[in-house]
Structure formats: C-alpha cells, structure tokens
Length: 378
Image (cartoon, rainbow, N blue to C red; front, side):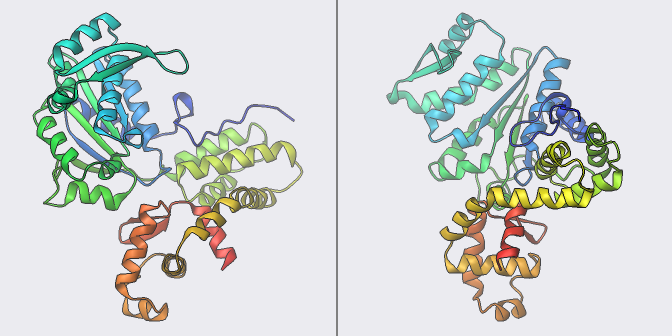
C-alpha cells in the first residue's frame, strides 16, 4: 500500500495547489479590488472565506508588483491601540520597503507616535508603536489614513478586515464612527469586511442607524459546487484506492453537506483509513469515519451542552425537529411550550456563542457533527 501524504487540508488557511475551485469568486473579487469597490463578504464559518481572501491577494501580488494587500484579523483586536499596531505592522510587512524608509514615512505620516523596530517571539522583525496618549485621537486618524496615503503613491491597495463583526465588542459605535469618518474618503482603496455571524454583519451594515450603513456591496460566499469537489475527491482518493468511484466521492461530499471544512475533514479521515482498513467496503469506511469524528468531538460537545441553560437546550431541540424553519409559528411554539420572547433570546445567544447560524430564514448548526451528536443523544 502506498504511503503517500494525505492531500486533504482543514483547520488552517488553504494555499497554493491545495485550494479548490472558486475561480469565478476570485475573478470577481479581483475586479472589485481593481475598481476600488468596498465589499461586505459574509459566509458561515468553515466555508473558506479567509482562504479565498488570501488566495486572491496572493494572485494579485503576483500579477501586479504595485499591489498591497493588508489583512487585519479582528479576533486579535481588543482595543483601538491594538488595531493601530496590527494595521501599521501589516503595512510594514507588505510595503516591500526597507525598515528605514518605513520608519521615516511613519514619522512623517503619524502624529503622536514613535515607531521602533523590535522582534516577535520567533525573532522576526516587528514594528512597535509607542503612543503619546495626549494625541491619541490624532494618531488614530493618521493610522486610518495610511492605506490611502499608500494609494496616492501609485499603489493598488486593498484592506481586509477579517471577522469584522468582532468590532461590536469594542467601545460601542464609537470605533465604527471613527472608522467611517476617515475611510469614506479613501476613493482609491478597496475595503473588504469579512464576517461569519450574519446577524451581526446585518446589524453593522444594513441598519439605517448604524455608522457603517450601506458602506459596501453585500456578497455572500456559497458552497463549492458539487462537481468540482467530487472531481477533487475522486482524484486524490484514487491514489490509494483505485476503485474509488465518483458516486463514492459524492457520498463524502453529502456527508460534509458541501461545506469545505467538513468535506476536507471527512476526506482526510477516509484517506487515512484507506491505508489501515484497505479491505473494508466504501460504506463501512464511511461509517467508521463518521463514528471516529463523533468520538473525537464528544467531550467538546458534552461540555458545550452542559454550559447551556434550559431555554437554549429547548431551542436546539426545536431546530432539530423543525429543520430550523418556522420556529415562531403558533403550532411550533405551542408544541414546544415556549414563549416567542424566550425563544428569540435563546436563539440570539446560540448565534452569539457560535452554535447556530441564521441564513435565508433558516437556522442551522455551525458544526454539523454537533447536530449528529444531539440527534443520537435525544
């Protein structure tokens, strides 16, 4: 039996030849960036939006030496000061300039800050901003304007704010108002706001009272089309299981419900079993994959369940038994003996905690195996 390395990737940014399809999405995204269009990109977690962003930015860097793609992950942002440090460091890394040139440029561009070169834990160079807190408002304004100043030097600039819904954890709407007050004037910069919690992204950009109301073009990322994923699965698994058919590949795709992370995870487990359980038939292998994935996550699922209150557990039971639709119908509320206000609060909490996702008038589980586990338990 071949000992080829496992080709399936999950749980990290997928790069290079491991990236599957999304040709149209990458082409559309490049055009939006070149036209300086602001994009509000939503997709549930594990749909591969961050991998799509990095793949697109990498291709633009290869195609245009004047392109600068900057990514700030809002999961790492806990204050205005941290945001400024992350943005400035991304510019330092992506500009291609020497440290001396970056240092001089920042000194000229930012009031109330003293930039210095330090190193991170791995020894890589890192820019440190030492703030004068008496000028913090001027400093914040100047840092926000750095991408625009780059664009005025002939650079094609795109700034990506990943998991942008986390901005709601920072200082109410003040941060959002300050952000818009500056970047609304950046006509030659494309801003991409990525988010995985649709209800929060909707509140940020679709409510008329929100500071960032209508600030960009809404764009939802769907699943990778079945034919493309089936072709990839078939090609990779036939390396270790020559009799693997397209129909077999479709069953892996269906188990993962077409969600890139889960299809890759299932492919990874199946590929490994082709080595250790080569005599088993396809359905037996698939059953082993399913059982193994449930077993590996059961402790985490139990801990998640134990943290929930009674209303949240009852709401999940409703989602399971109604397939996530028509939850607030009179019949369902009566059948499950829940008040509409109680259900609304429980569903909102489950979305905030990353258990449920709401899209197209339908509640679904962010982790499909948690749904399988609950069905077995109930």
